[in-house]
Length: 57
Image (cartoon, rainbow, N blue to C red):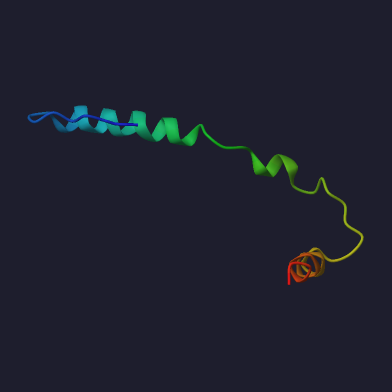
């Protein structure tokens, strides 16, 4: 996204443009907390991760 700030713009106009830019960035993404604790594992997650990484070697 391109934001054009013209020469002679006041500080309030610049702040409004920046706020619009930050609002758009914050709306993207997912709520990761929604999925916290959904997956039930029988063994330690760190051990599973190490095993999966070792498979690539």
